[in-house]
Image (cartoon, rainbow, N blue to C red; front, side):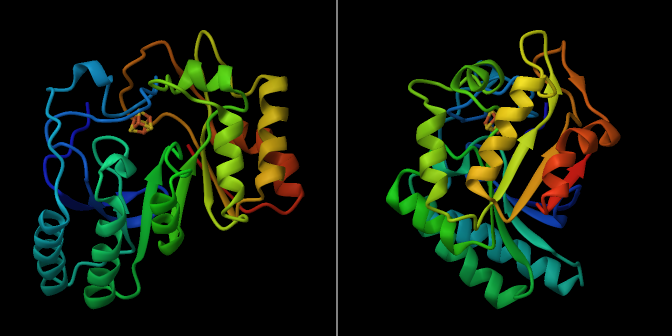
Length: 252
Ligand code: SF4
């Protein structure tokens, strides 16, 4: 399974973001997430090494400064500084302060690069997290299913989760965010199933995100019995939204 042992890693080529320099705010040796998605490239939560230590703002400042200086000296292009890594970045208690540091370093070293945060959107109801996500160029927020029951099957949240609450919280972005949705088929859930797809499109119409990223399985997954969709299949699935003028990236 994929694990990131450095706070700053890459840049790697991202299907969605181009040359992407990663920032991992989670433990170096285990995954930490309040979801446990059946497709998570970091594996199941239970398979982590039990490492719970997270980098502090000063750790991030030091690691990222070092990385950006090296990249800049080596003439390496960076399109995006991307919070991803071993789990859910907004669970780092210093997330908001770290965003300010990363924006400052971006402005100093790569002013044209975007700052992107990949998040499962569970923490957007918290004021400091919401405000921090409003500051970045690309808040990329996940909704994989159109019902709480569907989320339980794909994302397996720990503790309380209510999709309607998440949707209400996302409305506060007034469309200024990127919605990310995984399309897959498992024995218990199929993104292409007519009712699921129709309800997901209804959510999209309600939230009106400035962009939608639809993607499918790419690497090894913890749940083995999963099927990916092709770009053609996904394009057909989202055709009504394309026709309605939504901006949609589809990555196979
Ligand atoms: S939200 Fe992301 S990090 Fe968390 S389990 Fe799902 S895919 Fe993995």
